[in-house]
Image (cartoon, rainbow, N blue to C red):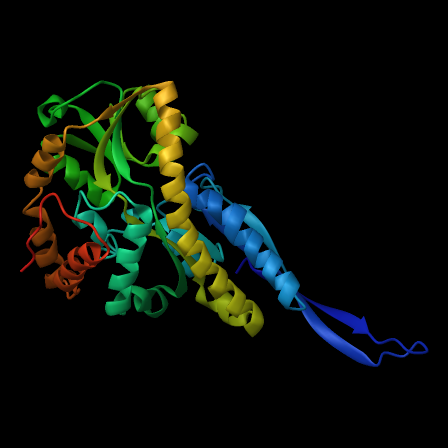
Length: 355
């Protein structure tokens, strides 16, 4: 375990050289990290919001202090290693994309199984919160199977398509290699596009060297990771904002903390969760405006979006059946997601049918 808690004796009430009261406090050091760089919005918020607020609130409301040892950009765990890294205590707190956990958390990418959903991260987050509330398995599995506590669900900015070439119709993408991560590769395959598994850590170099010609990606990465340089075309196709990242904490580490610090970490985790929706929504518009100044940003014809959604119409039911067969409540979760999105004001371009 890399966590270190130093016990420090704080002396108070000295009278004539005698100690009349002793308050014991702890200096807590936690390792926090992600495979993603801080240029990805949620990882940046881990630094600027989660860490800052934990330190501030612990200092203000307890006798303890918290220090963080940072491990972003894969410096401790790569994007595919965060779940196991937290489970084993290599890091105490980790931010991850469940897109890289197809075998361990196959159902937690449920919004990806319903593409062309809302592009509003706050609505995406509310939808996910509604579903998690109705299906306790989604929360409980982290503690029961992976020795960690889910502190936050994390909404992404809306996904679009950045490319090295201009396109207008789905047919223009035939034969082109486009990168994605995990299940969203199916968005490409069902649309007749050649999918390539990749990660943001290698995206710039791979785009630059023509390993692939595009990426399913939210605009913040196209700006912050300078993907606009090898990919000077960004098309607003509107695949949806997906809540499929998470912030988790090793359960042994959490249980060793003083109760007042535990309460603050849970509280900040909940606030951080809301911030991911709010900040990503605000950043989306700003980043698209930035891209308009740098490269060509194209608005897709709604008919093209509907055509692509129709090509995926049978996929959600297929995923539901496969995961149901594994003993997971997939059909229930996908039905609840469709309904929760509509309850939160979203109208699907193609209303998927889940039996």
